[in-house]
Image (tube, rainbow, N blue to C red; front, side, top):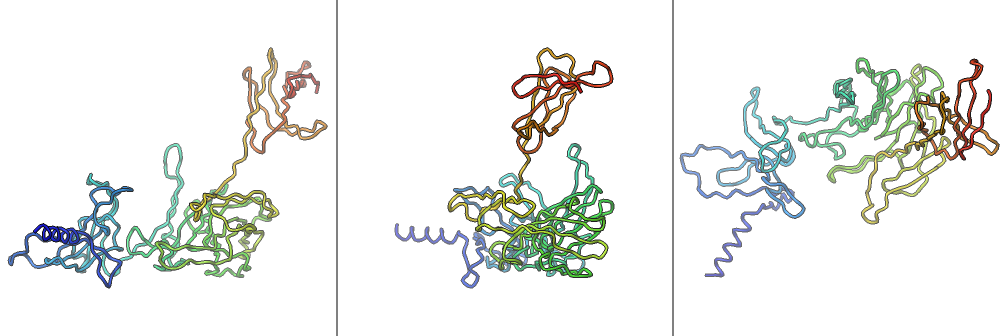
Amino acid sequence: MKRISFIAALLTLFATADWQFVPRSDIAPPRLHITILASKNVESGYLFMAPFAGYPDTAFEQHGPRQAGPYIFRDDRELIWLDYSYYSICATNFQAARWKGRDVLFSFEGDHKPNYGYGHGHTTICDEDQQWIVNAIFQELDIETGKLLFEWESLGWVWPDEAVTPLNPGQAGSGHNSSDAWDYFHINSVDKNVEGDYLISARDACSVHKISGTDGSIIWRLDGMQKLLLHTPPPPNASFCFQHHARFQPHLSPSSDVEVVSLYDNAAHGTENGRGSEIHTAPTSSGKILALNTTSWTASFIQGFNPRLAQTYGPLTEYDSLGNVLFHTYFDSGFLGLGVQNYPGFRREGETMVYVSCNGDTETRVWRFYAVTGWVGARRFLGEVERKGFEMRLEVTGKGVRNVVAEAVLPGKSGKKDDRLVVQNDGQKQLIEL
């Protein structure tokens, strides 16, 4: 009897677990356990249910069904339909209904705080034509007040047919639900010029757009894959795709009708969740400086910065204006370093704080600071500050300054000119008449 009881308990244990169908090993719906069979006077129809975890998963414990989401069952617990792609993981209030004369399914979906019963999300109505798309938006806000200064939406200006990654190949979303919406545009950088216009990079459209800061219209579009032909197609080395970090470079423009931009040509797009395959448009990623002539509407290649080092993970490479590598580093954590990404990387100019004081001084009007640049006393002006107290300071931005001379400007005895008091590194001082 003990042996029989043990077997019965073991069978019950397996029956309560999620199970998989032989021809569909990719699905594992929870199994219904009916304790009271439906009586003959129960309304015929299907059961619409959406189980989810009531407790949060941890590194040591997992709760709830392995494939949470909406399900349709029969009264005899047989599975009719399940959704493991059309709705996000947390779905509740799953029902069938009629909407505008059509049969639809609807459910709340979003995120929730386990065991507390609240969260945020939206209601999704799903029919045979249901698809989701990402409306790429960027905003400019006043940091101090939070006031919205400008907003732009991709779907208001750019049709989805400009996407390089088509719907559901595995690179930019399947469009089945809001969590896996088709990311046809994908804004990944925004820059603003002194005129108040914006430069945006649309990674999944392989294009760069100049946006009017007045009405949001597209002033021009630089098409990296030549999908939308300019009057004269750009040379091959001016093409780009899946780019990042597009920036205005006005100081490189030779004339008012030529706009120069720089960007990082990633030239690669990975897969999502192992679906599809990677896309490569060039052997390696590279930096590029491109020019757009807004009179002839031609694009040209100015300069490129190509990798000259072995492939590394999470690298940062610095070049000079001639393309020479000045600095290179990457993240190395042994096996854990494989696949490390870093985006982007910046170098901030060093800051030097220079202090000056002169004991007993009551006459200095202004302190001027100079960097000593040569062996024979050559100097470079760094800046000046009005003397307001015993000790004054100047913040110097740029490469580290090793030797500094502070010059005290005194009221001239004649009233027509100033005298200068030079305080050198060793604290000595010398009065020099201008």
